Length: 515
Image 1 (cartoon, rainbow, N blue to C red):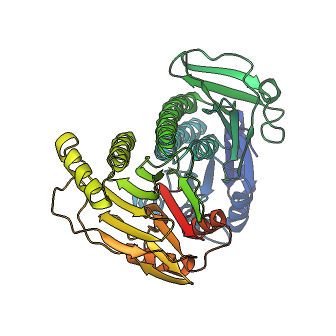
Image 2 (image 1 turned 30 degrees about the vertical axis):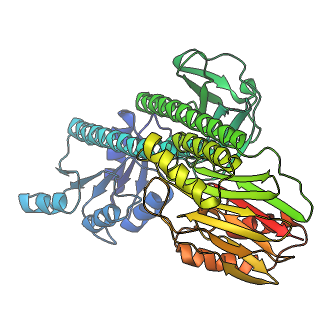
């Protein structure tokens, strides 16, 4: 392999004296020269070695130099190698035109002046170097755009670092490492190669504190405690991006050999990664705040009453999805059990706060002793007056644990399921959502026999991409008919079978069994 600082030229001619002259002139001009006597020998050498140019005689003993040039230009691996034709026989305008149209970059007719040969070779190489540099920069900018898009649309911090490391490795060749501090205060390094191989591991905190803005420095892998086997025994370019002094920086490690264009690409990449990482941290923080708020508003303790078993599950949406407004309620009011589940329309921190207001109103109206239908009408009126343009679904059940007699009122929520001796029935009551202000039907009455199980749930349990709600309810029917001896295990099994983390929506499940 010829060093990058030199230009390797293959001289192809069947005349030994002519090959010697051409090679001698080019060698004295500073080029590294190889020789070939035939067209087949030339193609064989070009396939096996790197050449920056081919000086090619038009007349060869085994095939035409025009055919050799055509094959060079037709192969994607060699198409960018410039070809200069030389000829002592095909020297008129038609011959030169045929050669240039066939793919040659220059055409010299003998007798050839040494200075003209060297000047022609230098001019053609100058053009190709500029062209390759422009193509390399264009490829780099395209890869930078792909990497930036991937990290800005990442669905979590781990995915962001993975896209960043693979993108950096492909942009600069070889291996690359991207390291950052997560919200938990744990430094994580993601390592990748340009082939797509990658892995992540915990990383010791950096040896120095990065300044605000962008910084580039040179270092060795052992100075930064990088995992062995990736970037060992070679100098590295280390860049950091930090938006504010109270925010942790992001680091990018790539092999040091970078020209000016590559350095600019590394600068832009690191700055884009730093901004994307901070946006992801902010999103993760908002999600944690919303989850904390939501969990704080759910019942802290389930009521204990003889003859009834209770189990609940609440799984918030994953960090890459906005938090929703799912909630449930289980309270013992005198000798009756209040069971409720609902979902505020929308996914955001705002939806979680609306959920909190609805749940507080639900508890207040229930304490006043109102039946389910009245509770729903009062909440509906409250939302129209104080929470305009907000909507929610809600199902409220008031049950007597001793007799199993129950009343149900539904406001657009999914139907609860009643499981009796392995048979599943839906407790349908068609009624408008909360926040609409439309008339509502009277309460539905039903009975929970001994041994029966009542199951309430939100749409996050049954909604899957590519399937309808009815298909989801049908699948739930199949799984809900068998009620485990342990009600908690029952809820866990439903979640395991029906949801696939990361969850795109909140999931709330309430199970009540009369024993």
